[in-house]
Amino acid sequence: MRVLAAVAVIAAASTAHARGGAIFIPPAEVDVGAGAPVGAADVGPSTEVLAGIHWASMYWHPTHFDIGLGYVGSFRQVLPGFALRETTIDPTANELALNGAYLSLGYTLESSKYIRTWLDARVETLHGSVNHDSFDALGAALRIATEVYVSGATGAGGHDGFAAIAGTFAVGVYVEAVHRDLPPELGPNGVSAGLSMRIPLIVAAGG
Image (spheres, helix red, strand yellow):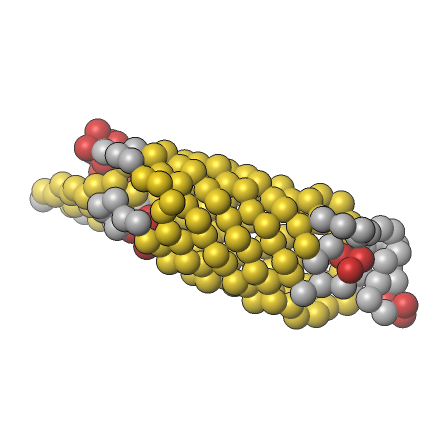
């Protein structure tokens, strides 16, 4: 972590100094994956995106607990002409879009110095649209994720400015089961898998 942190501090400080301003990167987790419906549904595979602020990204020591809050999005194609109401059928708009917020809680099933495996539970509040028809929905997911990580905190400063980093860098993979309150034709149940990344807190200011 010391080498990575030093590189990040130097890069942030150099950028802030060159711009004569400040840099603030929050401690975040970003996930991108693909999902598939389970059961009969008139939809194809989905693109799943999550981005939020997480305790396990901010804490500069290994932790067995995580809590996160952020954005969740899911986007997939539906059959041409599908609509929740017949009067809203538009054969040119065939995407189901779900956007909303999530709250997740996680605990490590196994943890070593650089690798850990998480069990996460997530709840979602969503706003959906399909063929110009909109609706609200709730969702829930259960996830298993494994990541390679390094944690730490360091900083540097001088008359030209300062930079500091605290938290965890990590890259990993996940698989999860998801249920959302959708009509059967839109695939309320599904599974997804993808890649995840943790970014620590980074702050820098230059003169």
